[in-house]
Image (cartoon, rainbow, N blue to C red):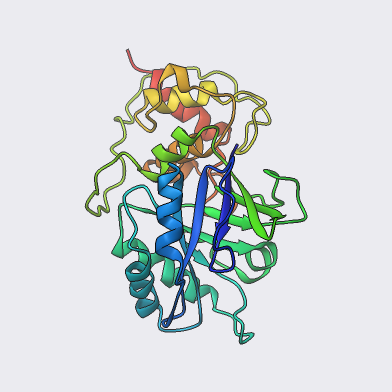
Length: 294
């Protein structure tokens, strides 16, 4: 997995050695902006690091906070945007509805960028009621080993500890190129669209799909996810080269499964609505779509 740090004005000159992604605090509420954010981003980009931005959410005034965040961050293509959902310094707590509204507002303002949710285990397990985390979950779980947060939901970043007064994270991507592809670093801005991916016609002839590999799940590498990746590619839900096929059921594979579920929601397994774990029924139908027609 690739490495990341998240910083604020408390880390004016962070050590970027061995770090792939830098997530910078841009703003808080409607009045605070990190005074070092421009210099911190410039230093990260000079070292060819991937950049992200986060906003510390306060209750209420959600649209105004989203607009203020974008003005402060001035994000570029390929930057990610994060909602930091936790208790404020005044001991107030943004509601789950505030969190959901902020994610939606930021996505509407920058539809071509990835928008993710940052929160800790308590907020995710005890305060969240909708499972909405935008384009991905950034989970803070310092009690778990790096890359093994104690959540069932798929995740993109795990904040697992502090080193040299700086929060350290791992990202659920095998390479920086995988991160860049997910974040859209090489893509031009795209207009918003409400259209789901166009599936191949569901008129496949009878076809016997390979047996579902027990244990296949997001975050696992055993059993291998290569067959799933090939089927997603064949059916038009994933773009991946043979060279990039991997055993790991990582973020790229999860995104492909998510597109499959968007087109065929009846095959989504039980659980939270954003889960991207394919089950035996979805597996069989996906392989029928991919390989079941002459």
